[in-house]
Length: 119
Image (cartoon, rainbow, N blue to C red; front, side):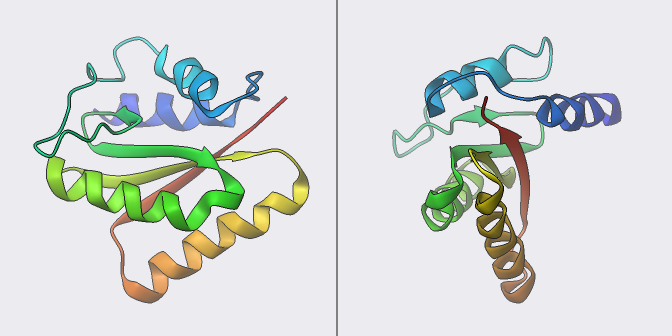
């Protein structure tokens, strides 16, 4: 399990070459043995990615607030920890990553955040 989390972390450090959220999600999901098959949750919603430990929303950094809400919703329904992967297009986007981290800390949210750079 620990090795899967390490592989996940390393994968997210690699630059993304995709031009949209779906393509980024698909690129991340190709890590063998790390992701579970996509399953609809009891309300019909589908997390962008699921691991053994996390229900994850992938979104552009400027959509940070929406990503928090979706990830928390998926986590509640799946019984997994919430995760957000923010797609960074330009250096200024990192301010949005800090917003997620600050809100998670302030409210004690069980939420992990990672980034991928587009391009």
